[in-house]
Structure formats: structure tokens, C-alpha cells
Amino acid sequence: MFKTRGKSWFLVLMFLCLSILGIVKSASADENEDFQFGVEVLLDEQKNLLEGKRVGLVTNPTGVNQNLQSDVDLLFNDPDIDLTALYGPEHGVRGNEEAGEYVEFYTDPETELPVYSLYGETQKPSDEMLEEVDTLVFDIQDAGVTYYTYVWTMYNLIEAAAENDKEVVILDRPNPLGGDRVEGPVEVEDDQASFVGLKDLAMVHGMTFGEIAEYFNEEFNLDADLSVVQMKNYDRSKRYADLDVPFVMPSPNMPTTDSIDVYPITGYFETFENVSEGRGTAKPFQLIGAEFINSTQYAKELNELNLPGVKFRPTAFTPASGQKVEEELAEGVEVYITNPDNYEPVFTGLSMIKVMNDNYSDDIEWRDDEWLAQLTGKSYIEEDLKNGEEIDDIVEKWQPELETFKETREVYLLYDSSNQEDEATSTNSNTAIWTTVGAVVLAGLGILCYVKSRKE
Image 1 (cartoon, rainbow, N blue to C red):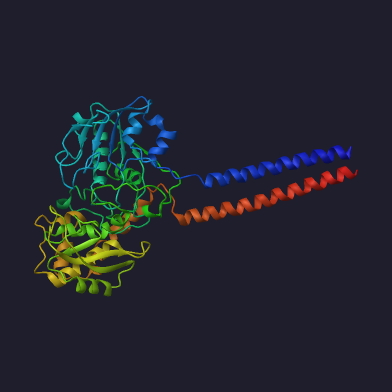
Image 2 (cartoon, one colour; image 1 turned 120 degrees about the vertical axis):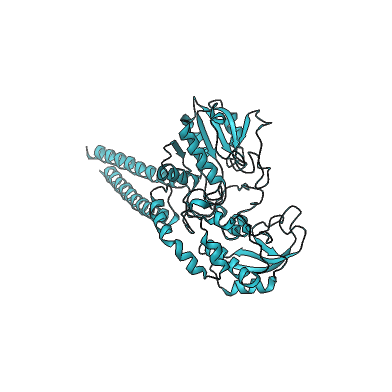
């Protein structure tokens, strides 16, 4: 009798043991699941958002999966999706237009679908442009700053969709600067609102487009029928360069992640007529220079500021024809990010302008259209720099609105950072260890029972 009971106990305990180990293995597999872009999640799990709808796609060359297949082709060739129109932001759907160039309406040669421009004369979709669609899908890689125009293309799209009773689906992508850094002015002065700064949003916002879309829709009462297809296994603390995913340049002068990392520093230099920000070179936005600068002196003074996470190398370069300082030797600096975790791009960019203005105020030509005010949303920054104000004092002026934005922003965040994930991983690891120990103990008891039953 005992022998039978011993065998039964053995089988029960072994079953429990295998079940527990199976749970542990399953949990471990979930933790190691691969990263996915929003478009990949859409096609794998959420095509119901588009099925039975006429779909309009807003994208550019960055709209790809990890096999570098274009969203245009993926959606057009999917039998469950009726793609009826394409919409292109600045630089166009195929990304072959220079900054500021107006892209005319045309027919896409690959799909024969109509392509509507959302840059230049028509920055917001008109009623006529939306007649043949029920749902608008947006999938574009951001650069992480407000003066990169794609974020305002998204805002206008959401607003137009709400006004025309269209659905909007945002396919999310990483913030290339990382999703934890938040810096710069937030509130846009009424007379400074433009397509490089349309609404209140921190200049370095630390958000994905999916998160910003939710923020826009709620905070500005757009009231659109909005869905966000989230990425899978995205760590918001990582920069794009830290992710093991392909990088497609979002515009002609943003060829690498190095360009993106320095863009919130050097994008300000577009406010000068006669200072190159490296356009027309192999390192756009990594190089700053002009004919009147002494590169050795400029680099020395910048390095003496001991700005965190950056170094400056004296250099000289010749921008190509069609760019500022074209075909002339420009002296200046190359900007190196030595520690992306603690550099302060907004403070650094303004410091670079201050040092240049302190030394070459008679040579610098500021744009007549108050371009720096449009980039920052603040008219006082240019005047403060011209008057030699300290950068600390300038930055202090917008700190109250930045702190308010940081609190508001928290409501719309969709992803965890590595710190939170580390805590969860630690908890899961501890759970797995103790569960495994329990399984081993149960297995041991089962073996003892079996041995004892054999002796009986």
C-alpha cells in the first residue's frame, strides 16, 4: 500500500516541479522577447485598427521595419489593408528633397498612389486631401527636438483628423536622444509660433511621438479618435545609438546618430547668415565655423568652460556649393559628445553662441526673421546673448515652465526606463531563484519518497 502511495507522491511532486520550472522558463522567455517597432506590432497583432478602412499613410524613408522594408510596401502589399493615399512631410515620402524645399503633389511611381505634401504651402491636410481615407497612419522617426519639423506635421495631422472625423493611428518609434532627458524652454510666445515651434513643448522633450501625440490630443483639446501602437520592449533611457536596430537617416543632413546627438546643440546656428552648421560637409551639425573665426582660440575658450559631456576640436572645412559659407574655408570647431548621459545640449549650444558673440560680435550676421526666437519660442534669448548675459541667467528664466511641463509629461509616458526595468528584472530574478529552489526541494522529496517506497 505504502509503495503505491510513494509512487503516487513521487509522480505528483515531479509534476509540480516540472510545472514550476515551466513557469520560470516562460517568464524568462518573456523578459528576453525582442524589440519591435510600432509598425511591426501593428502588422503582427493590431491590424484590426485598419481592417475595413481606407488608409492614408504619413511617412518618409524612416518608416521601415527592422528588415528595412518600407511601410509603404508593407501596407500596400498586405491583403488585409486598403492603402489609398500617401502623405509626405519635409523632405518628402522618399526623402529626396532638401530642407525647406516644397514638395509638389505627385503620383508614387511604385504604388501609383497619390502623394500629398504636408510641407510648404500645405502644412496641414486639407479636407480634399482626406476625402479618400478613413484612417490616417503616421510613422516617422523623430530627432528629439521641437525645431525638427516632423513633430508639427504630426500635430497638424491630428488636428485635421479631428476636424474631419478621421481616425489617427501613430506607429511609435524611439526617441533618438533617449526618453529621460528634458531640457529647454517650453512655452511659445504668441508671435513666435511657427513650423519649427508651434505649441508648448520642451525643446528637448524626452518623449516618443506616440507619447507626444497623446499629450497634444489631451492638452490642446484636439479630441481626435487617436490610437498609439506602442513599441515592444523599448527602454526609454537608451539613445538610438544604444539600440540594436537599423538607423535610417530622417533627413539629408541627419546622416548618422552622431549628427542627431549634436543637433540640439548646434541647430541654433541656423540663426546666422554667415556661420556654417556643417551643411554641405560629411559631418553636418557636428561642425561649426565661419571665415572670421580663429579655430584654435574658439576651441580653447569653449573647452575652458568645462561643459559636461562635450569636447571641442579646432578644425577647418569648406561647405559645398549651395550652402552657407559655400566653397570658402571656414574655421571653427568639431563637437564631440564624450558622455551622452550627462551632456546638457541646450546650455552647451547657447554657450557656443555666447563665446562666438563675445569674440566676433561685429562679424556675426543674425537673420532678420528672428530665427532663434522661432527655434526657441522666446524673443528674449537673442537679445540676452547679444547683451552678454550669462547662460545660467538665461536658462533660469524658463525653469518654472520646464518644471511644470515635466510634471504634466509624466501622465503621457508609455515606457519604462532601464532603472525601473532593472528593479523589475531583479525582482523577477529573485522570484525565479526561489521558485527554482522550491522546485529542487520538491524534486528531492519526491526522490526520497520513491526510494523509500522501493525499500518497502
